[in-house]
Length: 233
Image: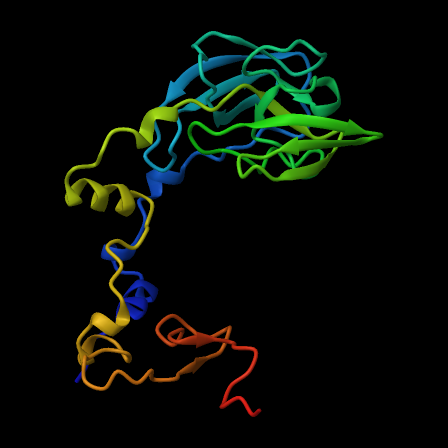
């Protein structure tokens, strides 16, 4: 009798394949209504995020954002106007061209969706009418509403990829803290009992069609392919 394959084991939800809850206790977004200024209460190291986090206090409460390079505790952050200082949260229409920004809103008021990883930033590239075009880290341009907000600066922690991991165990614990499967083994390299595609005998590809809404463990092989069968000429 075969064992559970990895997909099934992950779907079962045992402690081996479950993320640490305390890794994701912080929700990185700023409130819909921000006026005046806020204060950086504390800089936090979160195992679930690649960048350090900043705990911001404002008139109506507290929120968390990725910390920018050079941010310090007790720093004042502006939410209005056009003052360009690292950490200020401003509308794109008030940010001049060639300014580095991050945590950009997709729609006005959603709290910031784009660019939240360590060392990342985008650049305000050009303005056409009421549309503002931002050059993303992928070197592609994206159009935004001028009322969308963003944070001035570059996210801290840019050098996290420069130091080599050296040991496989360190990579294992980094992935485990975020519930990432590592190491990933090719199904064809497994034994027969470990995966439907396993064994080295007969290198013929075993075609298996899985439905898009199939449960964990049945999602093996082709997921809702556009077509099946032999192609007729």
